[in-house]
Length: 402
Length: 85
Image 1 (cartoon, chains in turn yellow, cyan):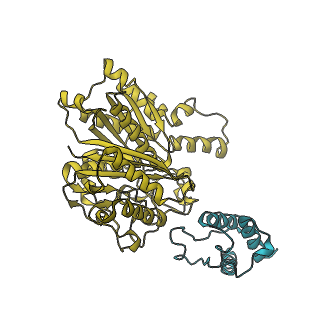
Image 2 (cartoon, one colour):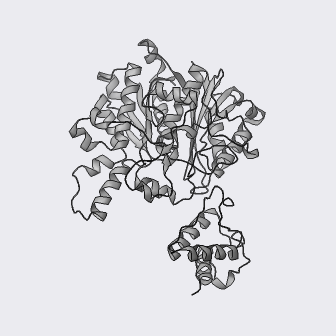
Image 3 (cartoon, helix red, strand yellow):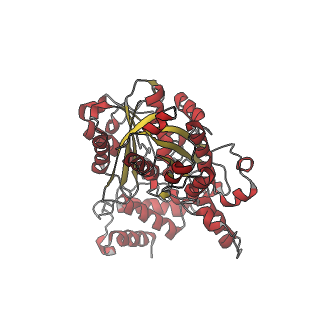
């Protein structure tokens, strides 16, 4: 088996349009959640979100590209460019033929669906743009990354709701570890902040109208975000030979299915994913210093996740740090694991633990060190990133300092 | 049908029971309605009466809308309907 390292990272989200800007915001505990701005927002009961501001797609992409790129694809391409530039990896010849793209998204081109349904149903038009289908399809982003960067190996999109990115990154990890691919572009993207995208979530009655406060006793729901996170996963010797700057090592993963409820989380399912990731990595529970929690800020998730952590880690659960950066960038649904992986990289590489902001009141059912409100300096050797999706599909990734 | 009968009919349908099995004293738990069933019932009631019920599944007891039993739900609906212009 090959060792797998991360040699490039890119992002765009409500905290920043690049990795350095995002990490700076996380260090400062800044909140990217604010009043949503888009058409018909006044008809929504939920009017806040982690929206990407000041992103001028028109300046980045030409007219022909704009007809093909939904906002989730625009985010993905922006993040992928940053990741590849940082990595310095070049895709040509055999490397290009064997390297691919595995990305996660839950909704794909949601705003393209939204705009065109509006056009045919509300405006009564009988004709849509010829590229509606290639623009909205869930694999559009992965395909455009492969075209833009000459990646000709295994490429596809994974859609497992809120765990999409973690499932995608786990698959990319497997491909590099097995030797099937020397490098993979992986991560995920989401852009659901449009009228239809928020209206659908509103229906579930689990959204907060004011803030995302994970683990806090007065938490009252999740807040949506948008954006992308993309990484270069590379075989260790390949990265070392070309003198790449290695951000951290990916050492294990596990996936599990609750097989119980379509929306309610399961302590056992979450616990099996965490302990499975440790077993896959060959690590003991007490080596883990930081967990980037799924931490949605809903009543159900946070207490279930804390109970699962307590179960897996025993007394060490009180020693480790666990935070939810969704309090800052919101829940990026299918893209969330990718942006949250950045907090794990920051913990391992920079020794800075991103905080759970908005924390106001301790909850006895979430009695862990959730790094409330302010970032903390700490040396961390191993970090886990949790994602637990609707449908009971869980994916946990283990990372190690290098 | 009175507001009370209409609410009971919706709750009974959700619980897969006859309306006669739903009494004012019944709690949703008694009727076997879980959190998902509750959210569906609230949606159905909102549609039936064209009202908005302030309910967040994360803090069911925090809103003004009392769901402790069927009678409380009916009282809450009657209030919301009367407030509707």
